Image (cartoon, rainbow, N blue to C red):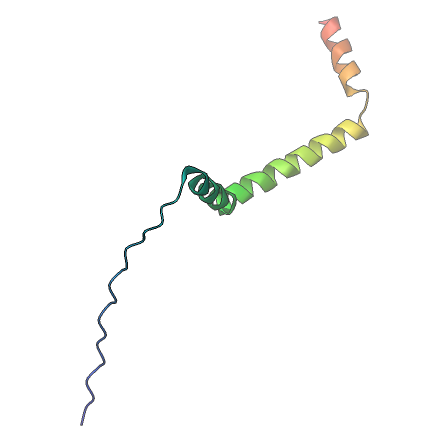
Length: 74
């Protein structure tokens, strides 16, 4: 004898009485934005570019003077 599948009814949604104010909504949107994988990729890419730029500035400290001298010639 075959058993019939158990069919369960969905529970009705209970109405919420609590409303979120603007500050709570803003914090929720900020947390969702910070957790976005695309945002993380942009932050990592920008941080790598910043570190490379900082390394070049430290490695070539007279580069600004060299550029200024080159611009004065032409």
